[in-house]
Structure formats: C-alpha cells, structure tokens
Length: 141
Image (tube, rainbow, N blue to C red):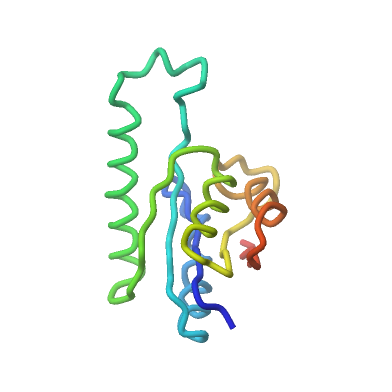
C-alpha cells in the first residue's frame, strides 16, 4: 500500500520520535516501503535576529543536525536502510516538501498535549496534514 514513508523528528525533543520510530519501522516493514527520516532546522536568514548570529551559523547548525540525525538513526534503527534528510526552513513546509520530493505517500509524526511547546510536534502536525496529499499518521503520546 505505501511505497515510501517519511518520519519527521525533532532532535531536541525525544517525544517527537520515541513512540513514532517503532510505528514508522513497523509500517515500512509491513508494506516493504522505503523509510526516510527528516529533521528541520529553523531558517533564521529572514528573521530580525539573523544579524546577531555569525555568518556561518546556519551551516554549523545544519551540520550539527545532520550528525544528530545520523546518531539517532544508528542508535534507534540499527541495521535499517534509512535515507536521512536535514531541511532548513519552516517545519511543516519542509516536511511536506521532503515528502513530495521523495515520493513519500505516508508521513509519520508525533503529537502531544497542546500545552507543551515544541518546535516540531503539535501545530506542525496539523499543518502537515492540511498541506500534503500524502496520508499522515499522527502518533499520540
């Protein structure tokens, strides 16, 4: 049924991947689907605060995110063929873009109680669901 699955994670928040990883793995195994994992680095280039960051800040934080994603995949999904993606921009837009660019027909994301303030989970799951043609599976805490 699904050919490619995208798992969206926020490396700073374990709750964005702790329960979602097993679900994404099970779905990929069940359908023989290719598994992609994405994390998004917030784009500060157009923000008012951009002038206060060093010129190479975005490059450094993107490299750090890539290293963190590789470590997470190695630790939580050993032996699984996973394509890793680090995107820069607005979270929900980048998740949708990566899914479209890679032919993902299912996006797996975590969600939580609204009072928690995280970058990836919460309102972004809602935005992704409204802006993609792919199916979206939201894993609750």
